[in-house]
Length: 209
Image (cartoon, rainbow, N blue to C red; front, side, top):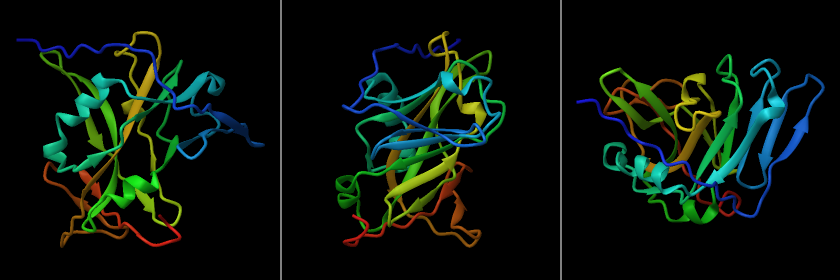
């Protein structure tokens, strides 16, 4: 039986902050919500970079989609909101970079044996079944600035949720640190479902928390 996960399009809730743009000499664009997220869009990544928007939301449908897989991810905590990038056109490459500021109180509540992970929602239509699930991105965490960064695969952008624009959803969660004999430089190892999991350290000191 064909299974369709219906998406409820709701008004995005923005936490009292609005994006601020910085344009450099090469026509690249950086969209920033202060102390929340920064999105860097290199020149040529999308046909109309001025038509990209970045917001935060507490859409319960999206958050519940993540929570369905919390046990699989072994995620003990997640942020109460997620980040959405919306574009009128789909990026032509994987060059967009997202950098999320992790709140200090969130880090303070994480056990010492946990790290920060970044997830993106991926819409998949296999014909017989449609699923819209979160997958972990390979990311780097900076304990001093409390930021986690990752390039954004163009495949996470879809127009199937709203039929009006392409969007990509991201959420931060805390997961147990993992070690492996196959750990590569940078601390990347293979997780329980064969996906790359970033081995990230939490620096709990006065300067980073």
